[in-house]
Amino acid sequence: MGSTLAGKGSATPLTPNRPSLPFGRAVSSLRARPRIGDPLFKFTTGLFAVLIAGLAVLIMVSMALNSTLPFQKFGFGFLTRSIWDPVAGQFGALPFIYGTAVSSVIALLISVPISLGVAIFLVEKAPRALSNPILFIVQLLAAIPSVVFGLWGIFVLAPMLRNHVYPALQSSLGFLPLFKGNQNGLGLLTAGLILSIMVLPIITAVTTDVLRAVPGIQREAALALGSTKWEATLIVLQNAKSGISGAIILGLGRAIGETMAVTMVIGNRPQISASLFDPSFTIASAIANEFTEATTEIYLQSLIELGLILFLVTFVINMLARLLVWSVTRGEGRGGHA
Image (tube, rainbow, N blue to C red; front, side):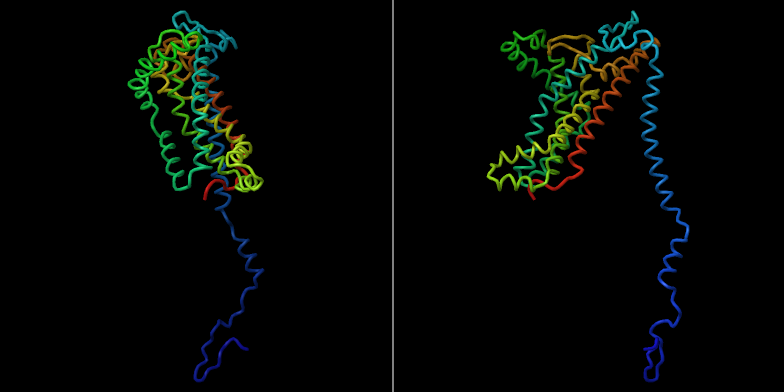
């Protein structure tokens, strides 16, 4: 058959009667064309990644170079000294480390059981039509500015704790050093309660994602072997424990770095006290409160060294959290209710 159809009174060619380029030569010609898009894209994205990493290193190096005076004067004893006297030029980070650690631990003790319970309900019990709206509402808490939590803590939470909760705690558990002292509503326990509300949506959201990443076949296998729904949930929690630990550590990183809300309710006094009712200081709140008052060079550099300590701690905590969550979600399946 030719390349033309000889019709009656017509000889219109249906296909061009031109020699076509072989397929191999066509591909070779395409490959031979210069392509600058891919190398440019690779270079641009790589540059962005290097800039972000370089920015973190630059911040750390900059703070280290601007906090040499307290390091030269106090050495590593700066971390263990409990004196903070700007007039005498004596500085130590221990009261701030103590306040940061205790308030963060209180926040986790309150928020972790609640977050875990909410996540289990959303993934294992609630239908998808109910779990998604509830999860959305929980995540909205993370979008509320911290200063709003601080104002609510001052005008609502602190008076309620001072008038109703703290007297009851002191009357029943006053024999413990944790619940002795003056209860004016502002102190470590109040700061821990505020922080627990602030980290709850973070832990809940990450834990929900981790539980949903556990393959559904594990639930089905447990139920097929005769496990109850609760026992199957325990198996899911066992398989997701690394990711849940990462969610908790991620919440801890948020609690350690929180500034405004804690500053407004913790009382802001650089002291170490066994009582949870007493005022205290965190690293972040100390920097926010005293940076404008730093009139001497060693005072300013001591605050910068506090910032360096906070930067390193939060960096390590967030890195560990990301690694733990990634170890679970990298092989994710789809769990929960469809």
